[in-house]
Image 1 (tube, rainbow, N blue to C red):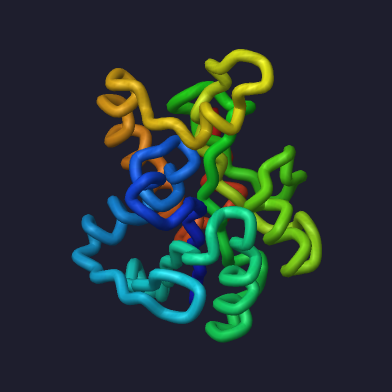
Image 2 (image 1 turned 90 degrees about the horizontal axis):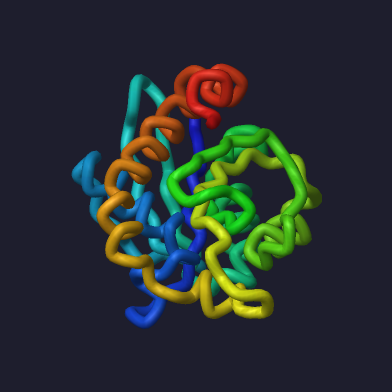
Length: 186
């Protein structure tokens, strides 16, 4: 069984520790735990590892957030991985900070990275792990918030949040989405 895990984010040092890059940060942590090395490949940084007999491919699109679908579509086709075996790890302002929710499908909810994935993969029917970053911003300041850096207290809480996300990713690949949602969703 093959799985494709996509962490969404923006490339470049100015985005590295921003809320919008929580997908990149989580996959970086997973790759480190699995002693994987990232390589620059077509449209993405890529690495892979084996877990309980599964081949797990990780990508961080280098297309910038709003064009993430290009990388997702390319790697799904290249690796011949069905939509139900992909998982998009993404930030979500509609979920309180530290809360995690896995869903088998859903709307983009205004997230441009998810919108582009929908456009280029043919719809909303793909699994995603939504990582709550909260909505602690004044009206009209959402872009500044998501592209802003974590507060110190958020930064201190990130490792535990990312470790739980990693548990959920590995569970998705081994016990399936329904059991993972039942076990982990807040």
